[in-house]
Length: 158
Image (cartoon, rainbow, N blue to C red; front, side, top):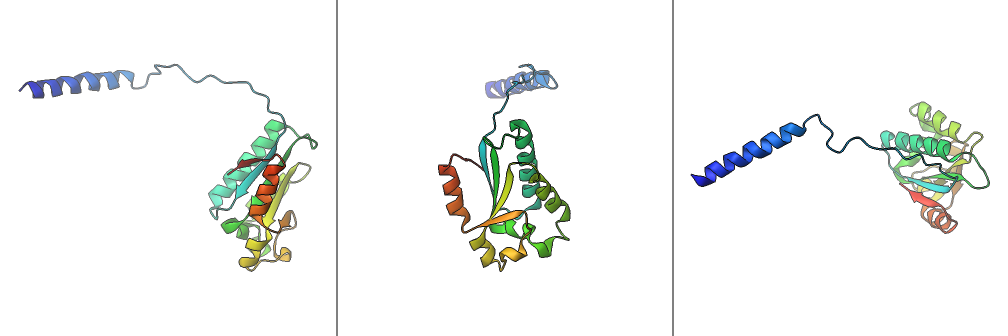
């Protein structure tokens, strides 16, 4: 009987406690930090074949570029494309991904944003440089390029 009473009392106590906090902010609200970001060297690794993932990366690249400013001597953002992300950038898929490709290309105009693609992975998918949009630069191998860029001071992002 005592166990039932203790259980009931606990439920009432914790039930009331959780209800008392519903809709309240016991810790207040978040504070904001006013941080000015200096231009940096950043490398985004893009290999997903999910459109939402690519759109998310384009959003992040665009926002980071805006936050950092546009000093070409200090900042650089490289988007490394390989794996299942390659077909998005294929000329023969342009009709399917027109909006995304226009957006990606527009990010390179007058900015320090650059798209690079793994030529080895593209070749495995039967794509040659002539099959890929002209705003993309082909590198021999994405993994080797990622390592090289990290040694050159690029921060790695996924």
